[in-house]
Length: 382
Image 1 (cartoon, rainbow, N blue to C red):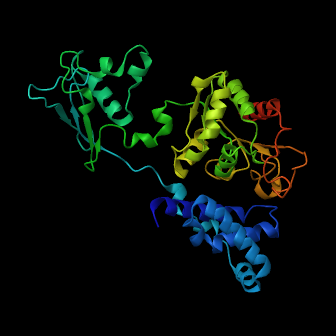
Image 2 (image 1 turned 120 degrees about the vertical axis):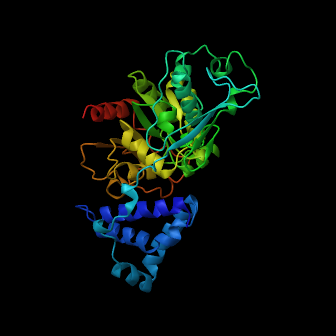
Image 3 (image 1 turned 180 degrees about the vertical axis):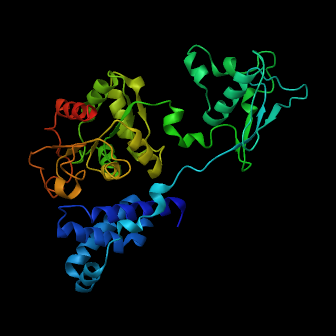
């Protein structure tokens, strides 16, 4: 089992342990949780689409197979005391070993083209130099090797990368040859690790997450159909514009396949420069970090909702719901002051995507832009 599957298994174990202890859950939901737990090993090894099909197959099997029904009913869900170490996992400590500055800012390469190597002490390194001695250039070299850019450079909007970073008295070799070595001898030239630090790389502090759909939603939309869990993308854009004018950055999440939805939202937006697509750029764990740091999540009833309301994330959530049943898949607990579930009570309501509302019917059209904005504003004031 690879690292991502181990992480996914730990997440499911924690999720199931906490779900079963919640007040007010019915027997059918407990049975569903037990099916997930008993079949977890097989479920983890499948891709996203195959997982959904597999879960439905196991539910159908439970309804018709007496022996499987007995197996499920006699099984026990994990206890909270058995929670995996997932929530306690911290980002591993990464130490710097050496930087090789090659014609980077104030550090001119030697006559033979070699850069200036500076070693870091394992515990603490003190840099002391008069003005113009290279302290700022050194710090920017480390920042560039980690992120591919520096704060000072982005602040000076007129400076190109070459004119800013390249040593002015020496054009060759290029500053891009600067290398940062970590304590495990991994080389950064630049940006292997920092690609994973989405918030820091994009210098985002105050932000709202929008998750317009899942892979099925994106595939249906791309095929020219209207999936039941899709809210109008131009409405998402209006919501994004409203909150971006209040100095919030907007981050759109999803898989790489869902980028089509993010792009449509950006096309309809007036404030395109305040919207960032993170589609295909984040792991499950990174999505959890993103949600925990966010001011608000706006999404339909997809998997991200069930990550967002878990401890220790506890995100504020505006959930848009049409064909689904809140008691089954809504942000839990339903009466939490941190959750607002907006339900379209049209013909799709509580249909669970049964025909004739499987495709090509807008099940969320009665949810207005103002409804989402008002719900978001209410939660942001908490």
